[in-house]
Structure formats: C-alpha cells, structure tokens
Length: 178
Image 1 (cartoon, rainbow, N blue to C red):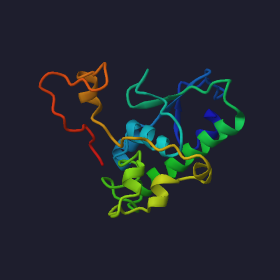
Image 2 (tube, one colour; image 1 turned 180 degrees about the horizontal axis):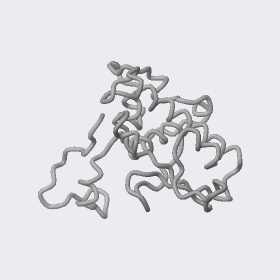
Image 3 (cartoon, one colour; image 1 turned 180 degrees about the vertical axis):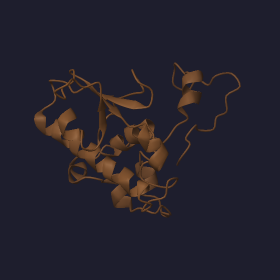
Image 4 (cartoon, helix red, strand yellow; image 1 turned 60 degrees about the vertical axis):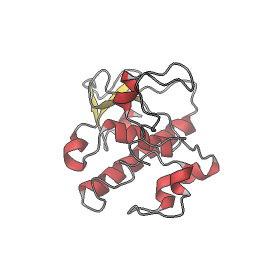
C-alpha cells in the first residue's frame, strides 16, 4: 500500500529499500501550504468514500497513519488506495486553482444526505462528486449523520450520556459546516 501511494504522498520512516513497518505514515503537512488542506480534511473526505478515518497526527503531528489489517480483503485495500489517489487529485485541483481553497469537496467533507439532498446547492462542485466520488460508493453508500463538528469543543466538553449537556453549554449543534 505504501509503495502504491508513494507517487502521491510522501511516506515517512521508510528503510533504505523503501520498506516500512506493518503501518506507514503519510506526510500530508505540505498540502496545508499548497492547498489549505489538512489531515482532518483528508480523513473526513475518506468518509464520503466509505472509509473510517485513519489515525491522525500520531506519532507525527499533521500526518495520517495507515494501518491495514490482515482481516481486510485485498479488494478493500485496493479501494482504499484508489480513494487516497482520488483525494490526492482533488487536492491537486485546489493547488492548481481549479477549486477554491475555502469551498471545495475536502473542506466540506463529509457530505451528509441532508446536505446533498437539500433543495438548494450552492457549492462549486456537483452533488455527485460530493456524495459518490467513486463508482463503488453507489453500491453501498454510507451516509454520515453529521458533517463537520468542532473537535476541540467536543474534546473539552465530553458528554458521556445521550441527552446530557455540560453545565453552561448551548443546545446549538457544534457543526462547523452544514
């Protein structure tokens, strides 16, 4: 997987022969300068492709640690690679100025059914690109229930039971992008 992704992402901590451990780390930090894209944007976009986000910012801040398991079939690993290559192309569109830095499929990911099926659509990319970025997604779409949330707020105001609000907390949702 690391070898197939290395033309698109820098792989950290490889040996002299380009080998890595059972997991590998993709350095996505340069995309912050070139496209305004961070590890979180890529992780959230992976949800639109039907994948759970990899480990972010550990052990290196601003990176993604990919740790494939032996329980996943090769076809699923290949789909993950294809999704990461497709996301790299989406980043390249922002880098080239073909997509706006502050209004693109990455910064708005993940795309919920409520957003995609809304009556109005004012984003500079299609609903199809938002919700079905690869052919296999149409066969088994996973719809996230929430788009972006304020992760820092959530980390600092942990709610341990459904319906419980921390003292002084607003009942307003913490979604940053609808």
